[in-house]
Amino acid sequence: MTEPTPKIRIRGLKKAFGPKVVLDGVDLDVMGGTSFVVIGGSGTGKSVLLRCILGLITPDAGSIEIDGVDVTTLTPRQREPYMARIGMLFQNGALFDSLSVWENVTFGLTAAARMGHGPRLTRAQSRARAGELLEQVGMDPAVGALSPSELSGGMQKRVGLARAIAARPEILFFDEPTTGLDPIMGAVIDGLIADCVRKLGSTAIAITHDMASAQRIGDRVGMLYEGRLIWQGAPDTLFDSGNPVVDQFTHGRREGPIKVDVRT
Amino acid sequence: MNGILDFVAGLGRAVLDMVRMAGKVALFGAVALSHVVRPPFYWRTLWGSLVEIGYFSLPVVALTALFSGGVIALQSYTGFAQYHAQNAIAGIVILAVTRELGPVLAGLMVAGRVGAAMSAEIGTMRVTDQIDALTTLSTNPMKYLVTPRLVAGTLALPFLVLVADILGVLGGFTVCVMKLDFSASAYIAATIASLKVMDVTVGLVKAAIFGFLITLMGCYHGYHSRGGAEGVGAATTAAVVAASILLLTFDYLLTDVFFSQ
Image (cartoon, rainbow over all chains, first blue to last red; front, side, top):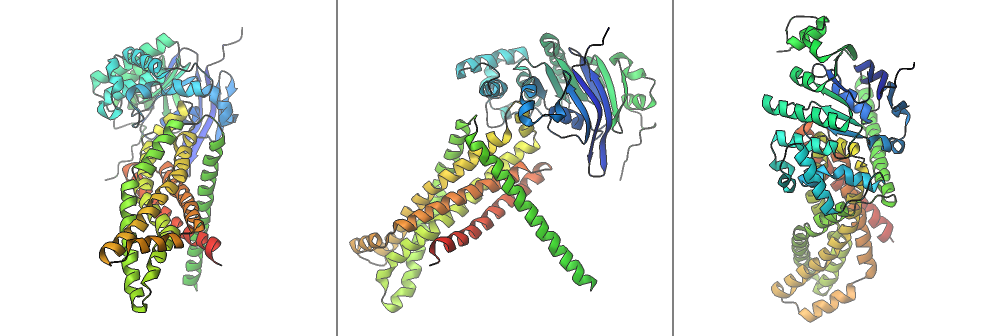
């Protein structure tokens, strides 16, 4: 019996910026319909990993397969159908300042329709659809008329989430979804993410250094350290992984194999 | 000897950096222009940029042109009155305004106002991940952000220069008639006699090229800004300085091409 093909398969992914090696041979399999959380310290390459998968950064070596197709070998035009299947929640929301909240939420739908990947919606239909999506993330549809600058950080994250799930993507990426939020709002966002991923049946990769968030979102968790995924396991083993590097990180200990360069 | 070698090496590096930068800008502009003929088209962004550049720059361009026309008239009078050649002032004003002052001053005003704003807007989008968000939402950032602005700059500046030409001549007329007691009808007749279609046309061609260069610099520096607020500030300054220098350089080159004989 053959094993099922992972939705996302990464092999030997490498990326360096000048002399600084950020990714040094990352291997990762994420099965369809599951959530994988990458944890790791600041500057360990978590965001670079996501950006490589999204095609925002070109890796130096290695392969990134989505449904068995190595997307690193595709031209931007060939990547378009894959991008249409991906939703992304950025760390700070990355909402477009010049557009209203509802236009932000339906931006991807409008873009997909322009590219012939979805039905064309009138402005009234788009606005109604944005209202439904805002309700899905626990917001009043009336918020759609506001500008992103009028929203709090937590509300911006929720609007970003509504925008990410608007096209019902097969794959969702979350870049530090709870950074900058209070613990209660962080838990709310995590709950919404878990709900959305479950309802859509999407495959998700999240990166975070918030252990509570990792446990709430992930089906599996992996730790990125010195450019490699040094450990993978179930979220409930996160604080008792048996790996000294992971244990030092998850318990926030100053002493251990991870040496933090603190300069006065 | 080592000092001379270091100086030459530094000079060489600076020249190579400049050539490399010119190549990057040219490539950036070429990619943006290639999207002019490839759908989808972002008409709303184009219209917004046209309004921003063409309409909201009108007051600053109009005032600059009005006063510059007046200054040319006054200065010309000071010089020409010594030789009893006041009749030539209307011709000098229209020549100066249509050939040089209209396009150059409108260009510099737009570079300061629109080039800086464009660079700051796109730069902020870059450092807050909005440009990456566009890519993840199946939207080509060059096509959505850069191409409409380049087209709008190229179309809007000739319109602004046409307004500047009219108001510059009006400024000269106002000073000559109200302050220097020229005959209004004689001034108008002299202006019409000196008006050349070629001068106005070349001024408008210059304006279109200046509009392209200003928006290209604004978009390029904003698009490649790095490092938060400081990076956006540096990009904005670089956009205005580069646009102003390019504008004056191309003004000389175009003047040489069209009027050197």
